[in-house]
Length: 113
Length: 113
Image (tube, rainbow over all chains, first blue to last red; front, side):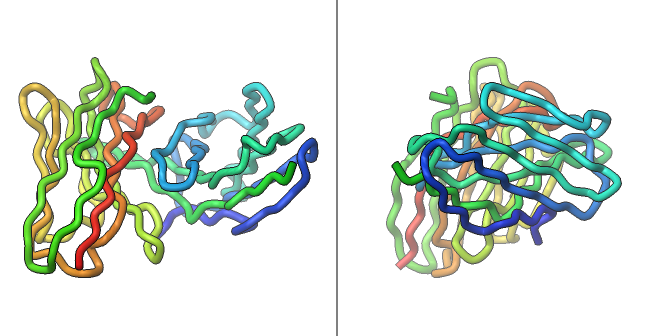
């Protein structure tokens, strides 16, 4: 089963608008990451936020993390057609000897030119 | 280009057969992760290896096995294939044993007929 759940499942906006995607998770985490996937391609890391951080920025990306609500959001500002992709949140949990990154179901973002 | 190489890119085989997927991690990365992505199950973590040793195990079927060799490349073996095994199989790598940023390959698309 997936740790994270993204909301919405699909989002369609016009170029220049902002896109906000939300992620909720169930268990305690070490960090939360956001990845992007173009159709049928490999995932690309966008940003990592640690459990003791509340907000992080990278270019047009802004990520927030609320560990009390077990939720995160990804904001893409001034969207471009090239931002069209699936976006996944992933939570990191560590075992005694290894670790895993558990992905949510993803949000399909379509940016219309 | 993530630096992670996966072969083959596409594979078509019949039920009951066995296939081997290969992954070369990014130079310097010691951890290799295998993920399965299908339409109905999303991205599922299968297994993690670090410097040749299995470190974390996810939803990997008994029919599947993996290993990481001394040169750090990894192979995922899928046997007694079923129609439901059709999916994109991703390999990812990272520097350490704990999950920071993962670098994903472009995946191996397996079709079982």
